[in-house]
Structures are given as C-alpha cells and as structure tokens.
Figure (tube, rainbow, N blue to C red):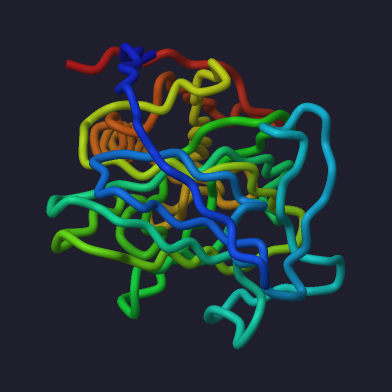
Length: 243
C-alpha cells in the first residue's frame, strides 16, 4: 500500500459573485486555489443540491435521466473562470461517485481537449480524487497554461456522480481541505480481466504488473492503494510492495 504525505499550501484568493448567475472568478493571479462547485456557472441539466456533509452545504450533479458517455454534452456543465500564474497545473475534484456506473465527468480547460475522467472509484462519502485521462491509462492530466484568465469546464457524463469542490494547483501537493484520504481500488482478475480495462470491479485488469503500472502512474494523485484479486466469485485484499 502506497502512502503519501499531504501538503497544504496557503491560499490567498479574492472571490467575486456576479449578479446575473452563480459565478466564481479569481481577481488575483494564483498558483493554487479551491473553488466550490456551486459557485461556478451551473448550466442545466446540472443542478445545485443541498448536503450538510458537503463543503458549504451544497454540491452539483446532473438531474436523473441524463448521461453523455461518448462525448461532452452540448449543455450541462459547471464552469469556473480563474486567474492563474503561468505553469503546469493539475485539477482535483471532491466527489461522491457511488458505483462504477456513476463515477465520471468530462473535464476541459479553455477550448482544449475534454478528458474522460472515468473510473474515479466507488466513493460514498466526499473524497478528493485527481483528474485523470481514462483514454491514456488513467494518467493524471497536466495542463501547461500561460499566465492569465482560464476557463475550467466540468461536464456531466454519468448520472449519480456528484461534485462538491475542485482544487487547481501547479504544485505536487494533495488537497487536504476536509481531511479526506484518497484511496484508489484496483481490481485484478486473471480469468475475466484485460489490461486495457480501467481496473474497476466491473472492468478489471488481468495482471499485477498492470496494477503496478497504474499505481506508479497515479501515485501523485492517490494517498493509498487497495489491490483486490478475484478468487472464485469475490475479490480479496492483496497488498503489493512497490519499489
């Protein structure tokens, strides 16, 4: 099991809310910043919901009956405008993703590639998870940005995936707001798995070597790893040693 120390960087941000819509904008250039999901521009069928366990008591998710698995939807996102210093940035989300069919979003910065952030994990409480690219071996996405104002779009993909906050940083740190440890579970099945899969329970990988590769590629975004091996009809705990 890999454990990484969380590092908290102090933040100084000035928030502005427009009168016409729920909107967040950073008025000073930042190296890292937390943003509440409900403080962005929330576009239907995404909607704000209440939860006393969420930061500031609210979060965002798509209304039931909406999914957009193949590409980002024409409407249905939460958008943020932020002022950032030049650098290479990563994005984290504080999410609830209760099952393998309710654990994904599309993530886009400015007008660039919309990355398929799928297989986040089966989280039934608010948990920080880094944005990865499911079409690139679940590697954590990095954005090289010029200094200035940038737009971040989080589109719905699967209904049931909930977003509380996002964290944008150009440091190799882990968000600690809320003191939640990020654990990723990787499912391995020699009989049913395929190493082109994402390692979820419904889409397991086949080899421990692939589990090692996933862990090595995502160790900056994950605090702990849990490797589950399928034996018969169930998955059992297995703790590999990583060099």
